[in-house]
Length: 136
Image (tube, rainbow, N blue to C red; front, side, top):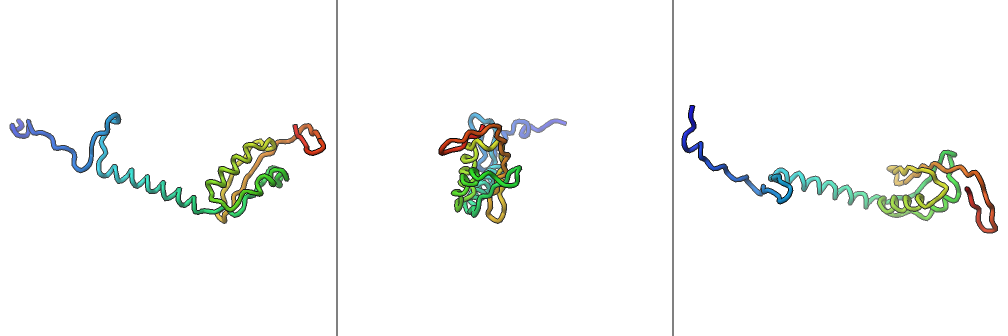
């Protein structure tokens, strides 16, 4: 079984549509691939836009002792009425700077609450000054 001369020397057709080889990457993007990439991009954009629409009403705090230290509660009291991304970032920065907290977990409740579960450090020594109290 021999191939005819036409089939043997036939030049392959170019890829259809907007498929092309990207320089440096070495793979083709077909029309379906562009739809997948744009779909993923749009889904990610919608998710971030929805996160900007969610407002946090209250930031709560719970610890292993069932109630957080008053210093931690005072630090978190001024954070509210912002979108979820900014509130999460501000809570994270506030808690990272606090020396009373060993570890923490931030939980979003669907009612618009952000609950911070903290594992407080247990102080071994305490120094009482005229203005402040220092825990070591």
